[in-house]
Image (tube, rainbow, N blue to C red; front, side, top):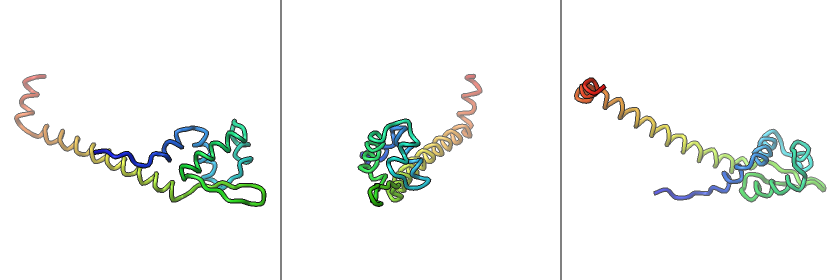
Length: 119
């Protein structure tokens, strides 16, 4: 049975503007104004995107004077990476099983003879 896990982080990354924000924050923490200067969207739009990222736990903020500085949450990103790694391992294991079964089937003399009789 497949259970639905926390997909909020993945959903937050579905938007390309949010992915661009995450990429920028991977370099260093930024204020909303700094992020807006790098993107083709308004400051209010950047703030809305940051709220989605913050609600998903991907971004945190702290106050520096009158500015809010945003940075990535490494623990949450690591959790998403672990989830992606587990999907990747499952896919590779499934692929290895299929290849193993195909290799086993072609090694059987009966199967080989049937393929030679039915080109």
